[in-house]
Picture 1 (cartoon, rainbow, N blue to C red):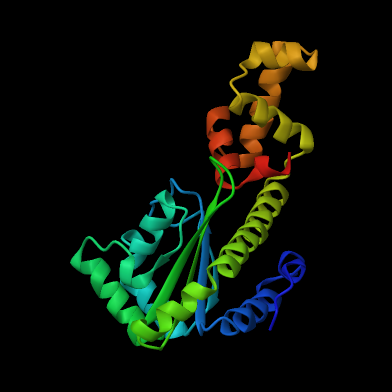
Picture 2: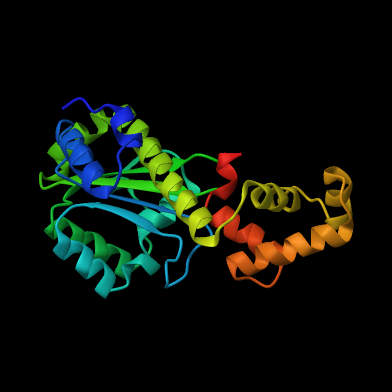
Length: 239
């Protein structure tokens, strides 16, 4: 199947998107995929910024969560600091726990693997597309590598799709207006209340009141925390 990237970005939800991606990767020699987007600074056990698309056996995901492998996942470690795709046989593995994770993944269909990081902005969310097949690596990995350009394009489209959903959810749940986003963006750019007041032709008192309303909407105590929230949820990407 030749995937239309317009179909990816216009997919209404995961139920519509996952079959499209599954069919597309199979046309390039893969059988399974997992895509995750997250904020690169999020190393927490809660994984509050993580969003997953699952196109593999659910048993593998259950084991991944039960063993808390997300805390030491070598794929996420690699994706945080690299942009080049890497074959599973070349993925840096530093601990026995990481090695064990990959061994179990192989038992559930990820014997030959290809990891494709996706980075769209300096401070925004990143993505990692992990694809695999049950073919032994000496045969399966060369086939996966042939699809390198396609998989890189797909990973970026999935990151755009995921980030858009995260952004829209955050804005809707918090009830942020475009003016709120503009104000947080000015703080992010280094403007203090006085400079923002001059920029918007209002008083500093008005700006502080707006800060307070934004903090209440997001559920934080300081405007700098609101900036972090906006970065983690890719809210600035709409500007």
